[in-house]
Image (cartoon, rainbow, N blue to C red; front, side, top):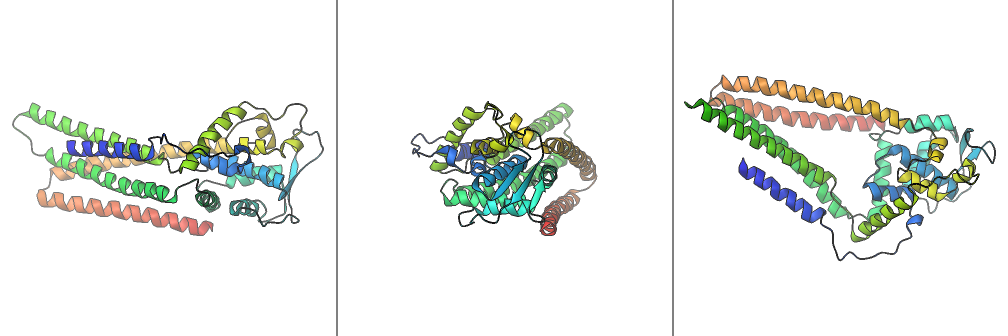
Length: 356
């Protein structure tokens, strides 16, 4: 057990030195951050599209500025009136990005004009598990890989490490728990010594589980940027500080004017909350996220209770069977775990196919 703990510490250090340690000889790239596409800016800052609400809004404003759609208000000096978003067909699409086409397809798949209320309902359905969102994220990622901002090999390496480490760690935890239960049957003549050994063994398991959690978090937050990407991210962080407290509804500006400002689109992509953002569209996703968080919490609690009950039943079963029986219980448990993983994967694939 101690060997596993030390080995995991080695993995943590390896991840740190490979993905977290800063390169002091970082090459400098002169880029005008304000000219970067809003969604690409948001992706670089977050390492993904972390808020679909902000992403869609930012791209709508950006498409309006580029002339691929029109946001028409009921007057030049309106703040709260409804507006209509209209698709334009007279703008050449030679230089449009693939992910921008996905947003246009999402907005105008059924009609060429949508109201503010319709937009709110559409964004509410643009879920992070939706196939459209995954395609959008992939489109931005592929463009950043082409522009040498993201290292494809580094990202794939991180994904492979995460996949392998998760599976191996889960199996090792199950094995350790089974061995701990099996050893509890061999009661020593010295009860105090037996209790002490069991406590130490269980403590090692807890330490190992904590190490696994820390390692997994490090893998999830691992850096997959090139030197150019790291430089851009640092510049974006500084740019966000500059516009963090900026308010767009000043100097008698109307929303009809603000929706033509790229800095407003940038602020949306960087998740900066402003009065202008709330005026443009109501953020229903905040309420939805609260409801989803409660559901996720209930699922986590339910899974924990199931595991706890299974653990207690397994412990009782192991204490009442011989070594051959323990072996068969272990084999059955491994088969169930493998089947559970396969079924989960197939259900996810089936759901994605249906969404298409």
